[in-house]
Image 1 (cartoon, rainbow, N blue to C red):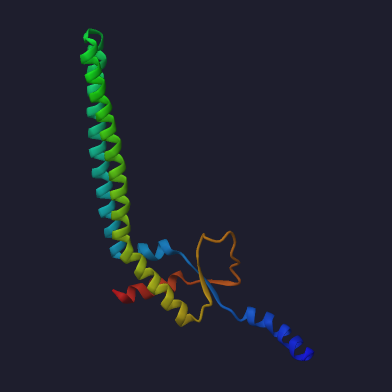
Image 2 (cartoon, rainbow, N blue to C red; image 1 turned 45 degrees about the horizontal axis):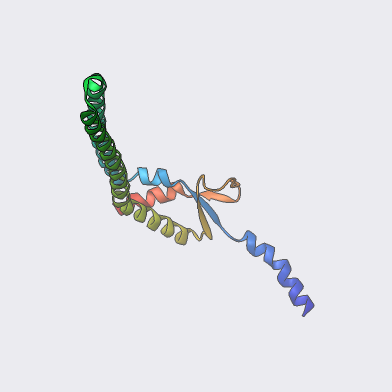
Length: 165
């Protein structure tokens, strides 16, 4: 029994070395897809429009604040309070719009990039199975990965993605 246990312990390090590990650059694979480029363009356009809308709102708030500053000294207390409330409401409206646009952008980003992420995951899984890899790690996610123990499978994944088109 001790001999069997001893033999198993000796063989265990060999089984560890028999494992095959890979590393992949997800960004490089995603960027090779036309869907990714199209999604990035749509997201950039959406973000640019959102920024333009927010800048317009901010300019309106600033314009009204400047008007208030110029006429504050001649206003009675009631008019002053009404103008300050209007400015506060405009500021709150701007903050809400900025928050809503940020949430909407994140949602659009998830929706547009989900099919790309699914395709990339599918390709990595296929390359992993076909190549007999035990694990494939994302490049940059590990503090250190020895190049002698891990094969970069990015090129294989890119080639597989191009076959899917």
